[in-house]
Image 1 (cartoon, rainbow, N blue to C red):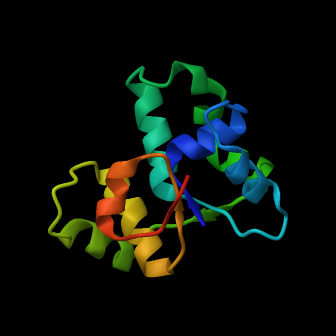
Image 2: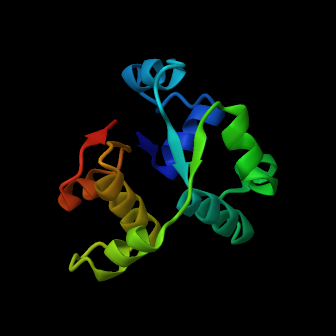
Image 3: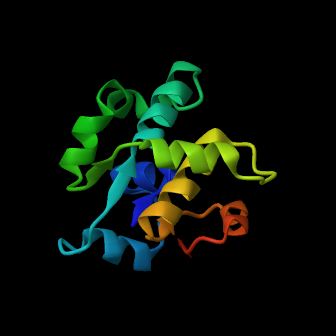
Length: 126
């Protein structure tokens, strides 16, 4: 599965908004969990803009935090970028578009609490 940016941060911060079923999935060492390069970009951007002041330590080295969590990084491929950019879809958030494209191409669910992502026709686990 791919983690939406907020799910990754909720996991790191042990946030109460992270559902118990998702906590169990993420703590399973046999579960493949990816954090997209788009989420690294989103965290760095939002921290720089002052929208994630609580994530200062994470924002300094997101790849290190991905590894510490036991997750894998998911690079953005040209195929991911092509689909995210060409999708005729009203959803304007570039980070969400990329995560949806990656979930589609990789054929994996996206862990998210963002119900707007369901319009992409991908499997959402929240």
